[in-house]
Length: 185
Image 1 (cartoon, rainbow, N blue to C red):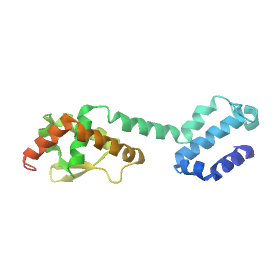
Image 2 (image 1 turned 180 degrees about the horizontal axis):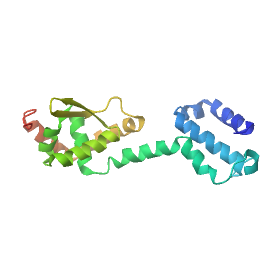
Image 3 (image 1 turned 90 degrees about the horizontal axis):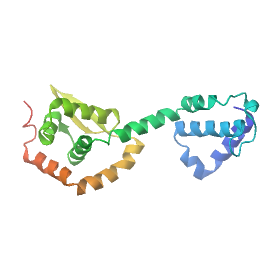
Image 4 (image 1 turned 90 degrees about the vertical axis):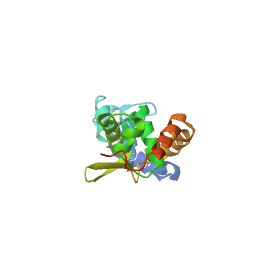
């Protein structure tokens, strides 16, 4: 990037309120890219032309992708997609009410086959919600620690709604009716 872009980025990042929003490296990198494109490509409020930086208009998407912003957005989409299934929400509710649960206990409470429960657990784990540990042939799941920033901000909202949700309440009551580990063969 040229000197004008770097100077503008440095000025913007010197303001404390703006700097706080740029603590995440990928976001900072993304905004530096966008500021650079604005300055160089005559976007609204731009200060130059594409020729100033030697960039073509088609390079914008590649710069956004390279900056890490696309990875950040894909990760956010994965987190929200992990919450779109009722079964996954029920699993999260159960794991928030207990420290750790075996797949067998989840199968019994949800009244679903192992393959279905495992598929949903895998999706939640891949989205950063859960961690697992193996003990002999059993796998135990719990809420991941530490959670990512987005999951941390969503957790209080989920807890609030789980507390009020009749299906979640019924699942917790069903779980408490079982002796721990009694569902494992």
